[in-house]
Amino acid sequence: MKRSAFAKALIYTIITTYPFALLVTKLSRIDEATFVPCSHRACTFMKIFGSGMVPSTVDGFRLSKAFDVVVNGNLSQSELSSEFLSPLCPTLSAKEMRHRCDSSWARKRIINPLHNSWCRVLYVWCIAGWSIAKVLHDWLLLGGAHEYTTLR
Image (cartoon, rainbow, N blue to C red):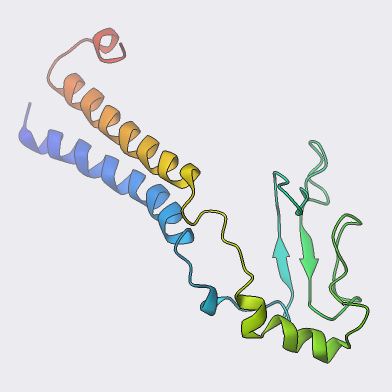
């Protein structure tokens, strides 16, 4: 078997695996200063699993209302399920609400659950392990090993 086939298997694995590792590592390092509040345009979000104070937007297996839409300070443009807080605080006007959401005070209270998370580390290690196992499997097949042997 040519060396180019071995190199091609390695390159294909890297190309198809790298985006998955990149996604989680980049999301965990988002700078809070770059966040843009949902004050001037609507933000659509979906939360599959609820955690802490933020419930899931998915009700069982029904995905018809899985997405929620929020505009800070605007009740008419927001489409939130009853489990979420109103996008307008009772003591603030819409303008004051948008100003508060864009303040450094609000940015300091943003929590990124992937930052320093054991889940992120575990995910990256699993992706790396899967990549190594895939390359080893492909190389063994290219080297003439039986499929049964490579899957043990």
